[in-house]
Image (cartoon, rainbow, N blue to C red; front, side, top):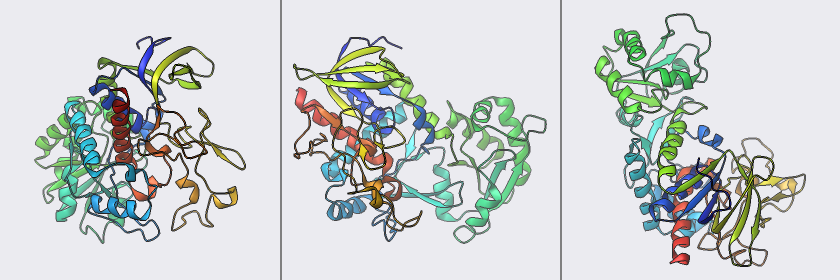
Length: 428
């Protein structure tokens, strides 16, 4: 890790989730000296899919195949939604640049410009997304054509049952075949951790054992689907070699955390950022942020106590909501802990949640967050930018329920692009 203590940067990014990492990539490609501070843990919880916009209105659960038509409807119905601040051409440019970065990092994604794609999940549901890892793309084709397919699980791998998946999909995809294979390690294993399994499948010996266990069962199918554990660093190689040995196209199915596709994304970022003028202070936090008389920001950094200080011309908050620590709450109020910014939220705690856990229209607390101007600068109590060069991106933004609207990754990437564009304009 590069020592960033007491250094001055063009940009400090607080938060190392999808929005923060994407912003760091965009900033690096534009020559901005950048430091990123935050925990990498949440990267394990992304399924690796890029959701652009899939559901609106939440109350009706209407699913959209055209994400751009969905965004247009959302912006019309919810003028405060973050997508309202981003022209369509900028959203498209953000996605194009982000997908190109992933491709260059050895993690190619497939997509159709003006359509969402459908794929199955480990829960036996059908998921809609815009960007699909290449490792999962044959599953999109197989589902669309309802092709004869074998779904394979590993005995001892929790959270993925081929039989349960096939049972839940029997109406949408009839005739799915299933196979539960024993240990590839040559002995009886009662529980398998997906991370060591993914690493082991990068070893030819284990790929050959896996292919040998599956091959007797593929004569009457056209595709083979497995949980997304087929390698961390070279998944395309693992899948291509398995496909050659089986004589069938292989595809991965998104599974439960820890997410191997999420780890692949994390590794892609970690390979790129340190060699492209981005100083990475992962597993540390911004404990205090102080605006200076020169119009800069001074940030105190540490794990639990002050260890270093850095200065930056601009700061980007990409800290997420409650899980990422970007928002905090007590018995009455939701707050933003670093700059004490106003948070859009229900009037009192009794309004945070609806009566049922699975409230049809979602819970009001899931719309909480920071309101911004068109440049993604958080607003003060008077509706003006709190600071000229303080920005926010990702799911900390208000007026969006990203989990129910199926827009989390796309919103993070697009708003990150919008903030870097705005920062570049102020600094030019």
